[in-house]
Image 1 (cartoon, one colour):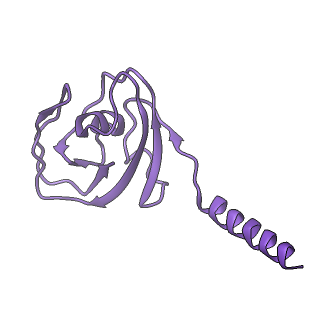
Image 2 (spheres, one colour; image 1 turned 180 degrees about the horizontal axis):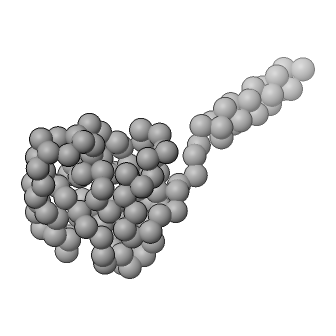
Length: 120
């Protein structure tokens, strides 16, 4: 009886954790958070390998119309050659965004924008 309760408890815990796991959304190299606006405040995406195009504005915090995968390469979360899974967190807009050059990706400056995101 005791073993049955332990097994049942373990099954319930696994079901609880499995229910909270969300599959990463497959995106293209140029997809933006704005395009995926139906997602929760934090979500996972799967970036393809060999991303070399997509506009990005900002550094560490990016405008929501920036290409997620290119922002992730810029931030050093993934490489352009391999792609991979990235966690995207939506954020409020900022008054300005500074561009920079990192990991082979150049991002641009931008003024005020209504929404942002970060990647990790």
